[in-house]
Image (cartoon, rainbow, N blue to C red; front, side):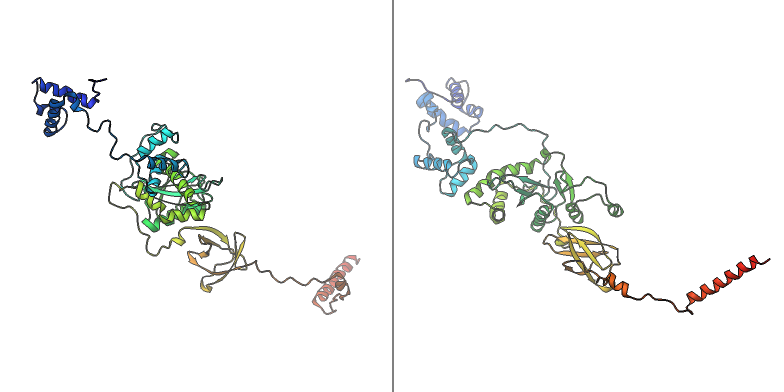
Length: 433
């Protein structure tokens, strides 16, 4: 309808103030101050208002296409890729993948397109479940560690991603394994120490991989140590404190990172056709984790790094190990994991028979035998050596063998004869009248 001008709330506010200026109730400078604009801009819109009236307050771009509007062909190409190759991708991740093929579109624009086409639904955001905890201030002060079971390779099974996320910076590292094992946790922490150093504390859950619920052994009591798992012993050697979380929500930062990876990592492996764990780990090491850290990691509140270097003389291959006590047999052999080891030296420090020694298994499968903290010389044998069996004499040979008869002057017979004679004399004296 002619004569009707549609104004936004912002434009209506300007109209009210400029009408006050027109009526002489305030100045242009006062109107500009009330509208939170510069005096220069206030004079500009006052000039347009005097020339065109309320119509002059309407934005000049209204009703015109945006200068940054994508052409119809680019929009159709983007939507076609979202239907096929990028099916199931969220708007943000899909916009990043479209940029890789030369289609630049903002994630919000793509979100609106996908909603109109029925390819995306707005997800309901849940309210906060627990009280928010401020992140730590120092890099390495607290590192969260957990395993995530998921259909990462989209082949039906659920391998485990064991990962670490720094609480202060959100920087992460991780590796895929078939299960969440002690060996896998050791390898992931070893890799983190090689990259950044020894963290101050680990925030884990209550799995017996990290903490154990038992009474300390006698050796642990004598050493003044609590009951420790194999992973806990490695952390104890490195002076890393293990803090078990009371609930999954308590370590929500790593849980949320799992959600990001279950979205982005799964789709990245789908695009690359990765269907096995070695290829998946190669993807993590060759740029994917770096890209995730560049995207989501941030600086810590403090520049002080709480990571510590590995102490001089301490070898990580002797830290991340499995240790068991075994008894030295009479032939100086030791049995561990159904394998036999023959101790050969050193001669000056050989353990005594029936003594207890420590058998250490490294992550590469090699073994070390320790006696009072010193390495022993040994080699593996297929089975325990056996003593040569005594020859078995058949019963027929025993029958043919003549029995031995002692001679008359043998001490046995002499002593028997003397004793018999003395007994005979005593009986005769007793019978005499």
